[in-house]
Amino acid sequence: MEQQSVQTASSGVFSVNDFCQWACIGRTAFYAELKSGRLAAKKFGRRTIIQKSEAERWLNSLPPQRRC
Image 1: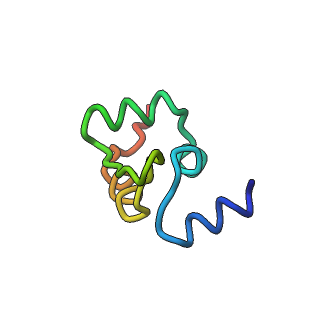
Image 2: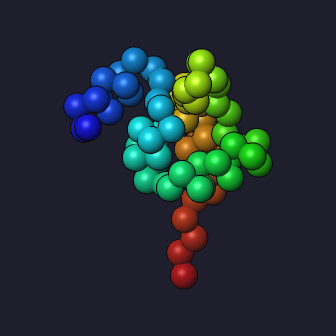
Image 3: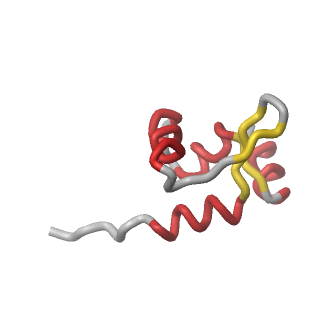
């Protein structure tokens, strides 16, 4: 699975599972981000794909971690 993830990431798109693994989030959080409009995905047939540029934009838009 790890080798497949690297190939997917280098092609410029992620599957839902690969994106969740890359972002260290669960599928529920992924779909919540989609529903809120903070993350955009595309459909290719039955597959949902996320462009790497969109994934990086989403990651950069997250607020920085607060320190106590």
